[in-house]
Amino acid sequence: MTEFDLPSESAPAGPLIRLVNDQRVAFLVVGGINTVIGFGIFVACSQTVGYVVDHRFGKIAGSLVTVGIAHVLSVLFAFVMHRRFVFRVRGHVLRDFARFESVYLTALAINAVALPVLVEFGLHRIPAQAIIVTASTLLSYFGHRHFSFRRSTAESHDDATRG
Image (tube, rainbow, N blue to C red):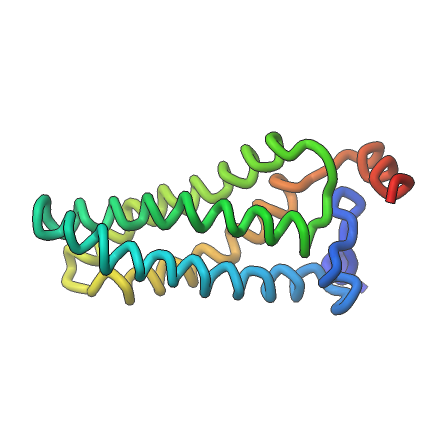
């Protein structure tokens, strides 16, 4: 058994962990759902707001506006999903959200640089985003596991005794 087979003390078991007994698998399931929803949001933004901005200000601006709007909506959805189904923590909602967002801001910064570069090289915005999302998944797992939803041993013990 490795440290990834069961949830760490700082991340009590969420419902999926009890089902699959592996936080990585639970993260991938929720991450898969988040990715599909987030990518759908990105496509919808790309085909609506992004399209308008493309024609008014250019494709780079359209790509950045699209990724910005999609980021905000996707992070809100992902936060609820990870907090409820994977890491199952209590309290500290604003602190957890700030940490969660900081992990995604790192991914957003990478995205904000890589997406315009790939678009400038002639790749269409949607396949370029698919490449970037695939590359950022690993970063987000470790960031959320070890930072976003981290709890001290005392906080984990308090959560366990409450519920």
